Length: 349
Length: 278
Image 1: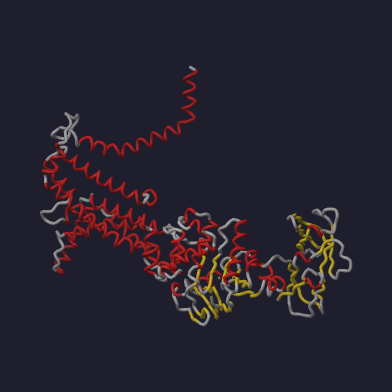
Image 2: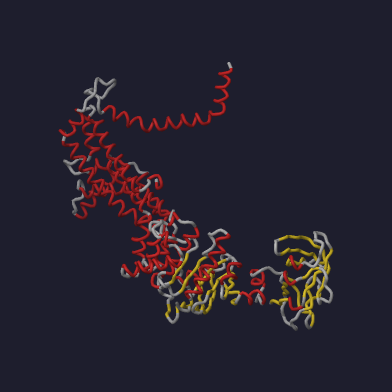
């Protein structure tokens, strides 16, 4: 396993920049997730690391080894494809052994490592099956074993969970994360699913339009998003456009005066996470506004409300149901006050 | 009266199904009856092919072995068909890979060109190929006209539309990612082709081989122009025989030819399910 270094990697097709000036250091044994909407360049970045797409500019290093000009078959990466891409004409164990055969290892060694890899993903019993006889989850584990058995420098996962049903997806996600920790695998995963990304990553890279929007841990991205795209892509949030009107005062375009924790700053956007907004008793709150409930959706643990303020702004509010302060249920049309603390306000450029 | 009403009601409900059944039966009859008749006729005692049979005999099959032009023609046809099949695959596999996998310009044009032997009448291909070979022979002094090489070359040409169609169709249905997976695991392009791509498109290749064989084996128009003096293929032998006599020998030859192709189909079907690729 090695670290990976991407230095100003760029990919253009004609005049279209798919990935621009991508610079990133991935530490050994780190689980990094590339997150973004489809077409944001995350898959292209992964394919450049694997060697299937040639960068238009920039260098890619595994450890100290410059691999930029190496073809995929000389890079020693283990890629798990979105559709698994198992060889349909080979059995499970032949699929896993394929990479070892290509390395011309001796037969005993191939057998030993194939068995070991199948044990790792708990598929020893299915070694002689054909891929079409396996369920989606089993096929996924074969793909993982096949990628790991060659002891790759880096494990690459291209939307590995997107073809599994919701329940299985969570199980496999935990399994992959545990395996990655145990074996100390340097891993890059691509996904468009933010929940999946948040649950497995050591560090995330949020991408949009071929550019890195922000790099950081889950907490950093959620609590200190660097721009509107990140704030809206990671979790949900209420935005108010406006400008600072004085020290620790933000005036929205709709005319609300909001107390914020930050001193004067040039930022023009205020973001407040729905769970930081309180409903009802707003005694002593720095920010308290009246409004009408416009929408209620009960989600088990939480209830979500949309409150229309007198200023015309709509505010999403998320309330933990065991902490609901009002005894009588709030219904659409109820008059209510919403409140939040100054330190709940995130100011974004 | 109640019975008639019941029948009418059943008919009204089921007429779509009955109509479909009748149409299907008619189609199969149109396809299979000629073959059945050929088989039946080959056992007639009549000296001239005619109805009704005056009795049954096996003498036409015995007569075949006494007429060397059929056995010779059969061997030539077999040889040409096998060579044409190999030649067709040698051209068809790379051509299909290029058509499906590459992004080269003029792909559509190449595709149309490769399929054109299906559109041009065989007799026209035969004539033009004959003149072409004469020109080449004059320019290079290679003895091409009336040679085995020239004959096989012509037959390869008519197998190409089949090999390209069948193999390309198979190739289109294959997930590109499995080739990438092979490369990711350390296989260079050649080993990816040999270890993954070709094994995976095997059904298409086998079907292509079979169709090439059948198309070449039954071809008359090209062979008429390209065959060496003194040699015959089986279809030519049949044609020549028909010019002199119309007796059930022809039916007997045809029956044997049909049987050989049927056996080839059944054998192939054991290795790949033809219905999946054709």
